[in-house]
Length: 274
Image 1 (cartoon, one colour):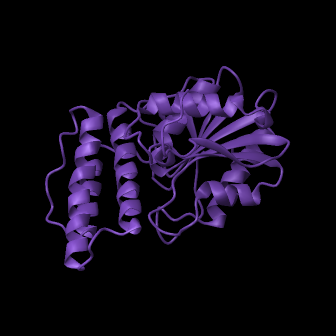
Image 2: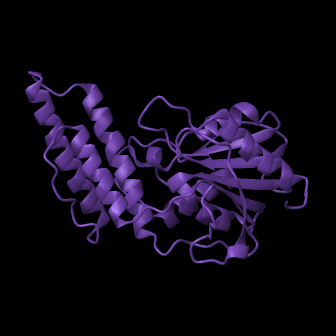
């Protein structure tokens, strides 16, 4: 498949090991905070850890991609990496927050090739309200008057381009207020960061109903949501585990990475569910 100008790899290997392979679908926060994939790779000395970065894959000339397309590409890239050693050992597809639907699709794609388990960490399912709220939040951060989101039901490429245009106008107004002759590079980087986040949320919103993997894919969910049920499924479809306590629901900590690795070790050793 031809690379898209300016995009980052969708799937890349962070560490190598002989035991179970771990794919972590996550994002760089809009801050210097740690990523779950990085913390897992740092702690997983015996595992091959791969990072799936859908926002990175949308960071260049590619404004939008559907979740099925991203899942196909991520699964193909993982299987093409001969160092992954996918054949003959367990594979765990880990999702953080809003990457849940994408990770379920990736796990389903790999099910015919590997012994695969999906691990969802505090999963969320972005909808129309979430996309419009985040777009309004970004406008507020830019000090702009909040304008309605472009039509989310229309062509997604057109929608993302329209969001980018509106935010670009907002950043140009910021530069003018600051007396700058042109917008600095940091403004362009911020615009790409905001655009890629909105594009991925839109793809999640458009991927409704939430995909449910085949029965061949066990699902573990780290959540403190009482009575969690995987959307479109039954209460018995997945195993739930309490995540370690955190100051914020979206906090990524070494303790959270350790909890993910505990699940990998438990499943890999075929320990009975507790």
